[in-house]
Length: 392
Image (tube, rainbow, N blue to C red; front, side, top):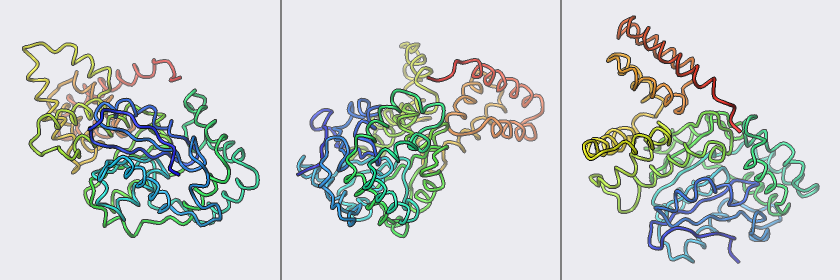
């Protein structure tokens, strides 16, 4: 018996496995799957008792572990003939990826851990949840899941409601076994041994695995990078799909088995992904549409160099890069670019108060008149955003 799964993308493309979170099916990756499948052969799988996977793929006697789930994933990869593959996982799916990186590093080419943890709290809480679900089914946890998974403004979105239906449809025995696995899971002491290129994504408003959990992973894994997604809770890839998709595209392009440090094509792909993540698809689409034979080389240059080399460098996170960029634009009076990067700073996780603090700092070192103009530009950006209709 194997896990239920789907396989999309061109044969021969670099393989990429996507793992789901507890309570969801493989549809939790629906917002990212099409974009990732343009460049990868994408395998999405269901947890035991979830979606199309049988509950008895895990021990149901309380002894299930994340190692058991990792073994099931390796069996899927073996069935495809994949010796090495990229892996991205949400929450429990991310824990499986971390386990593989610790215990089977030879099988992974790269790793992305989304809204996950090296330790999901005390084991007793998971044991109690397992007992509750075995006794009363998944409805009691479904009743409170929206508060953990989504911000208040997104909880009524059709995508959110569909995932809650997934939770209600999960087999109690399989769900409880996954809780058993989480109760026994703790990789905090093993993070320093992870050697695969790792991206960690956190929702800034995630109550289930707060950003501190993501920072613990990044601090523990040498060379890991962090993206904190503003206005997103536990299922950040569903709530803010553009930012998460772009970050994953950039990460897996830069860490593809055939990517070389001097590979312009790989830099361009990674740069375009980060450019879209920071500036937004609408802006990049407009810039691309305006490209002419005269400006094409410049567009290629900024995509490969500014975005594909500088913004993808893991030495600084995107919040820090936004602070630096805002200051430089204030100093030189580039107001159109400043407005664009005020919006980008919000995307990268800076609050309006933090942006104001950056502009105030620039008043000291760039001059009061420059900062005065910058505050006016930022205020216009905020006013325009406040006039937008609420997000559905």
